[in-house]
Image 1 (cartoon, rainbow, N blue to C red):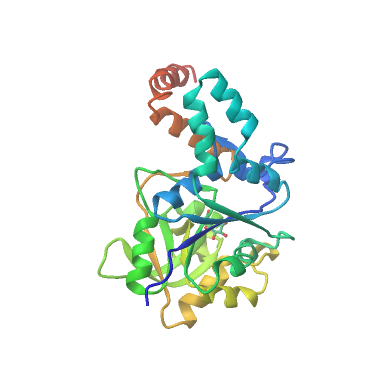
Image 2: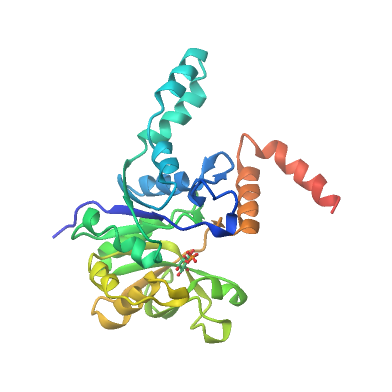
Length: 294
Ligand code: G1P
């Protein structure tokens, strides 16, 4: 039976400790990447992939996110009065983008727990999970391929990317076997943030998942793992090893921007701005001049 359209779940309830004090009163997902909050890129990616229903799992400081995706009549009226049509369109865009829902995580008990909080909204249907730390360049679409693989194989799909082995301790790492598609692997095991010498490969889970509803039952009984948190990776390890359908990985070879730590966040902004038509022509020569002074 064909499933209902996929819903998207965006966990945004982390404490954002790496960005303190910027994240003292604002979720890290609201930090601007050039001129849009990181979470807007992620919602736009879901919409571009054909998903209209987006559930954001929020923590403290939730109002910032809710307000961003809501209309702001007084701002719209002011821009209208000034005839600033471009900015008016940008302001309206984020509130018209998708059908946005919110649920609170309550206690921050880990990514697995955040995803589990989506259970009532998602119901008995497959869904996509998008993490705001990983921005996928819109010119290199990843999620549509993952949704298609879910449909083809009827199994959970994670996004995998080769990383420098020295970096694997920052990610979930996958043990894999080849399939007939060079961009798709069968995942035979997953470990959350292993040491380099214990990692099954240098294939890192990047923050895109397409999951069956069965994952909720697994998450419900998943014990706290790495860092004392309920890990999505541990639930996926069970899906990969203890279910007939298993888990597949789509290998991503496109442009990804990591906004999860400060240095990578700065790099992401520079890379994206340098590529933009409105900013790139001025930024690129300046970057060259600046680099020459270093
Ligand atoms: C989370 C997941 C990890 C995954 C990563 C991708 O970790 O737990 O498995 O590889 O996202 O960004 P976090 O970055 O939230 O610590």
